[in-house]
Image 1 (cartoon, rainbow, N blue to C red):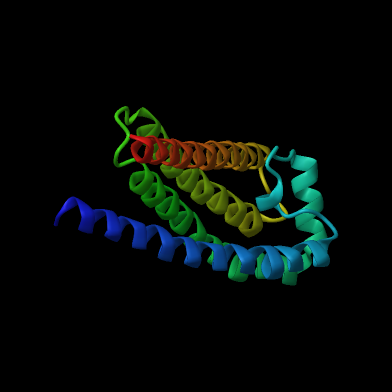
Image 2 (image 1 turned 30 degrees about the vertical axis):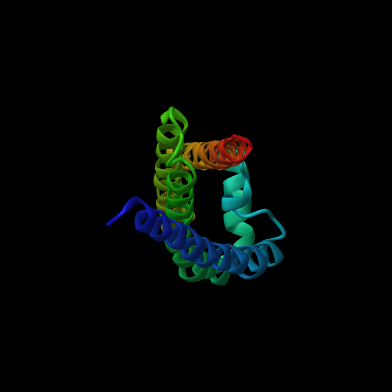
Amino acid sequence: MTNRNLSKHIGKVAVVSGLIGASVYFLMINVTLAHIEAVSGHVPFDMRPFGYDPIEAETLLEALGVEGRAYYLSHQIALDTVYPFMLALTLIATICWFGQRMPNRILVRFGITFSVGSALFDYVENLGIAAMIWSWPETSVPLVYATSSATILKSALTTLAVLLTLLVGFNRTRLSVADVRR
């Protein structure tokens, strides 16, 4: 495969995975997470970038009730098994697509690392939320703190990965403008 064909392929992967990821995110924000918040009157675990403590976790789980907890597992966690992969694939493909001509690939490497880390911590968060729901009402304090830590790390790594993607895109644009001027 030539460099031009590879670039086109990576670009297509970035666009298609981005569309799928954005669609899943739209569903989560506007349907599942909105429903969880409406049922419980509290912000869902997934939407707390600075984490939560055992009292906040207990309050949310209690307020969800049996049906809300079941919905969290069957709808939100189900969608959130697709989303981290699609987001990571989108970010990685975009970073690789934009970063092909960068002389120093350190930003590309960090962007890929942060994207993979973001997805991994999102999956750890999902497992922790599922474990808290399954163990309810006997949720352990260490489990809440571990899940909350995964939420915080997911949020931080996602932010860093997106910022690096934007930075790589900016550098790509800057290099393209410089090439045109020559």
